[in-house]
Image (cartoon, rainbow, N blue to C red):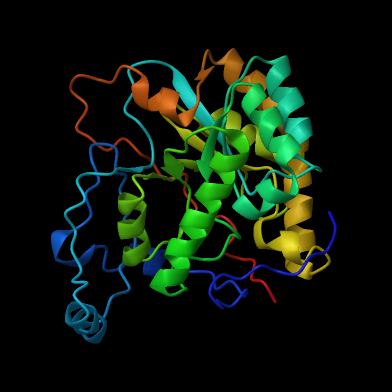
Length: 316
């Protein structure tokens, strides 16, 4: 991957701040109306960080009063299916170092997946975007440049969502229905914008790998023993903000993690298939039959102390 100037949106800083799990869980609400989550909301919620009373008053004086008459848009952690279906998701791509190899592995096993793409990467590698679509996979929006949307202002969050979606749909010809927030972090304003854009928020049930750089066998064991029907697995085919500073320490760490994930993927798929699990896209998972008596949320946390599996890495 070649070095490139980091594309910021509306002057936002390119430095990522890793939110702690406590902050991620704190004060979960979306204005006075609350977050409309549907039946597949998991046990965690997303933090509300604005607008302030002064911002609301300022918008009202301009005739742009805040509102939340946006219907119900789910935050999806897992799905209470009555089948053996699971979903693999790949974030941060497309990337020429990872995505084509992942496509080959998936094709060998007749596996469909959901690729949550960065809009900036789509513009750089349109041929890979089209290869993903031609192989029958589903695309999701992973923002324009992988900014942490819990730490940027509301206009920047909206621009990241819209630029990402516009690039993905323009290049792929596929309509995007899901938004995977970078690092799993969102402000309340970003949640509202996702609803305005008619995007369901697609989280994950289990991280693709234990934290840190692990040998492939540890990743295989983690997935084969930890994935259950209805689960959404969070994997990667890129290095997020490391795309723009590939020689930085945090980017080198991400590269090592992605290389280990890629090496583990064939055996992990084999192990999950041996357990009679069946792979579908995120959209396919939502369409699967569900338990008639399911109480609603079925997400289980995989034991990580952080909502973000890479909270130990900070862009320097």
